[in-house]
Length: 157
Image (cartoon, rainbow, N blue to C red):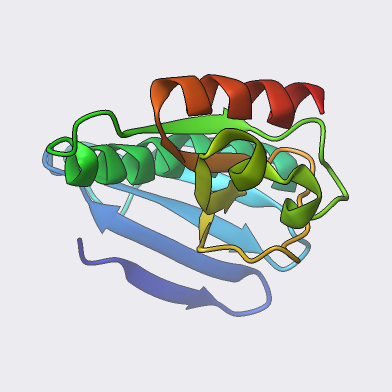
């Protein structure tokens, strides 16, 4: 996809791209940290048909909803030919403000965290000193049993 980036002097930055339907969809990132989701009109890609203001945490949640499933899907495709290995996206609720090493996840379950999705951005191959934050989603690879145990640990401690 070709993303167009347009500086908006004194306002922020507009980033958008064309979708198959001929419209443009994008985001305006304001200097004050707020965001606006925008959609062009069908007959005029330069005119806005709809805009939705988003607080930073709302934008992060939306980005996670859109980005994390793609990452999990890609990993699942890569592992589909390996019998017994599965990829799952798990919320990290019990370890906010703690490190990946604190989970001892690999030792306790045999499953591995291969990425963390935070506010729509993937952090691949996090090390033991990676600090989790509220809203993080861990992309975990392992056996079905290992993933179930990892889910219990990441949500319950």
